[in-house]
Length: 624
Image (cartoon, rainbow, N blue to C red; front, top):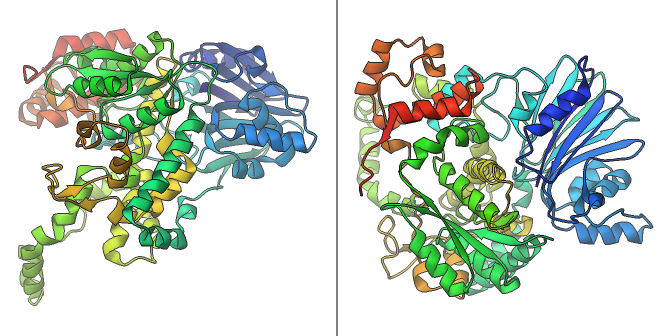
């Protein structure tokens, strides 16, 4: 894992200095080496976190007389690709995956290389002779890559704060305000910064000198949907499906343990991360576990201790007190680069990353992706009861449907409100487009089954992106690389094609009060039962709870002279009315928006914003 930044085009200022400033903003992503190459109106900077080939041969950028590469990520099949290159008589300098990627790009070209490589990556590839540049991102959007285009110059970086060192960038007030609805980190392409985009997952940006940048999709998630594979899994018994999943997750985890430095795993005690930790321990006895002890009634530390005891490995516990959200929110937001609304648990995750670094770790395994692929969120399983629970309403809807004029009074239109429509517009109707794609991808299924598969398809390209954003930013704030065994290409293909009956199963026991007699993530739990105590393999999902924004209490004066007050032209009277009459949770979310706006819109320092939080905020109900 590393940080990259670069430009291609005409820069009148000192390009070397601009790249140096951008790279310094990324040193937390890669403190082991800083490299810069600048020539022919092209320049790249790279900050390295050394994990493979710790020698100087692995330092970046990689370049020759024609090509220039800056790369962030891990290519898990690089050894196979190395053998392929060598079989063709191509020499690979050094033993890193970067060296393999460079030679693949040189000899196979960008499009063929993207077809071959497996892993998580974001890289820039410049052809100085052809005066072209490619910005490429992995299939599922694990690694970040931001870009902007201004005055015939293309700029890019792993984080927006690095872009800000090369060109003036400000938050977009409309998208920033709408982030109160947890949308700031959910888009595959949009950001809360004006004029700044992401290279979407499975895409590359191409630009030739004198032309506008163009985005091309090299991978569609629909490509993983295979009716024949679905039918095969549908005919398989549950035991057979579990056996296939077991083989896939073992193979994936083993690949992701590749490292020349000690490896760890972030665990909560929940089944997803616990299974990954158990599999990793089967492959490598030196895996260290790290967990957050969110003090109070939300603590899951005891389950993490049970896991460590069962696996007979070391556990690092990172305490997080209820008031720590206030103390850390400014620093967390600085790294998060959008309002911390979707996942206020980013704050304890940052603490976990710091603890991992103190343990001497640089790379960890995590359990993200399982819930999306295997219907692990409680609302998904509970939805199986919906047809029964809604039966009386359905009957009445049909009855009143006989009298259309009467029906509209009893059952109002389901069309979005003006506010909801405006909110969707700020996201360019991406969720609606995703749902249509899902319907088309699973058109071979009857509607009753299609909705379950569509859930996985949509959440893989929406909610999962927020988790990947959180893990990247909080991990890299402490120079920790996160890896995701559930997001191995073969595991994703299996999960997307696995029928609902193998994901959510009826059972006699009362597994979870939110969906009694139903077992979620059934195939995951079946494999977990082989290696974990029952209380862990059957643990119901808690979702990394903490005293979050819903417990934040804001005193009048907090918003004064701030970003939200400025763009809303909100005076003291309006602020008091909002705090006094508004839902405290919504006010807490708006406070998170203001923290972001102060940092990135008003350019206040982290320390200044942190002091304001301490002065005007408190936590409510933390005694439980």
